[in-house]
Amino acid sequence: MTVKMDTTEACDLRFGQVGIACVRVKRPDAAALCEELERRVRAAPQLFSRAAVVLDLSHLLNLPDDGTVDALLEAVRSAGMLPVGLAYGTSATEALAQRMGLPLIAKFRAAYEPADGGSIAPPAPSATPAPAPAPVREPVLSAPAPGSTLGAQHHEGAVRSGQQVYARDRDLVVTAAIANGAEVIADGSIHIYGSLKGRAMAGAQGDAKARIYVSDFRAELVAIAGHYRVFEQIPKDLEGQSVQCWLDGEKLLIARL
Image 1 (cartoon, one colour):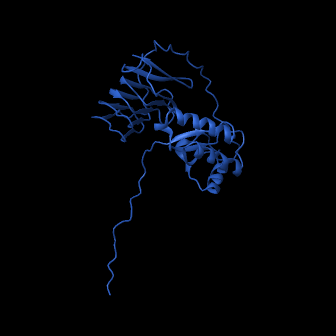
Image 2 (cartoon, helix red, strand yellow):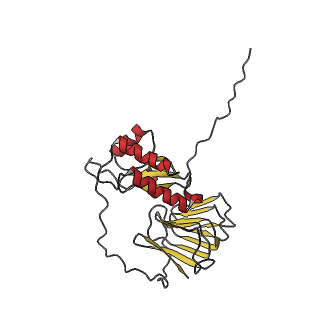
Image 3 (tube, one colour):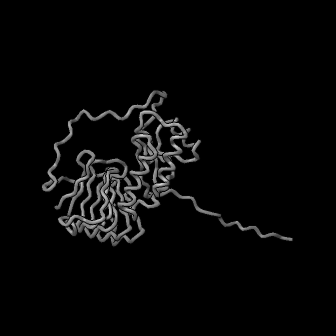
């Protein structure tokens, strides 16, 4: 008897940009973590309910033991989110991830292990004084901060619900509307010459100088370098207006143009 073998490939394996949030743990208190995440899920269920998240432990003084980390992961699940991995940190974090059966997500690196195996220290603050805060209503306009020397990526036409557009290492220019449930992401700044009803995330790789410019502001969420604001209702003075978004320290500011 001749058996015919199916030689077609069983699957494709590809890497792509995906929308994963990062939960930065500031203290290893599972109950407090669950309470805080539940509050955020209630505030914006369309964004955070069953959202894939990465657990970042790098801001804790000491790496928690396995039992504590397991409790933190369960707190994330109980709040209605889905932990998919740990943020890359040190070899100890890697060993912890292996024991927990979770991957390390390098995109969310918050600390780096020296080549000599020495201790980890957070990045030293810049010696350059921080610029004076910009007035919220009358911001100082400046040229957008590009992610690299690459020219801006242009997206012609609307971005539909469920669709995601990502500009790696550059600015993103969108010439039409971005629907509810759609995402536009850029490592640099984002310019939207249409209505923003979905989500816009600039400075995706940590560029705090990136900005977001929108002709018709009706967003679900805007974020720069991981700092975000969620809108259940747009403030009346911003709804439908031309705005820009920028970071002042760790505060995300929005003002009319």
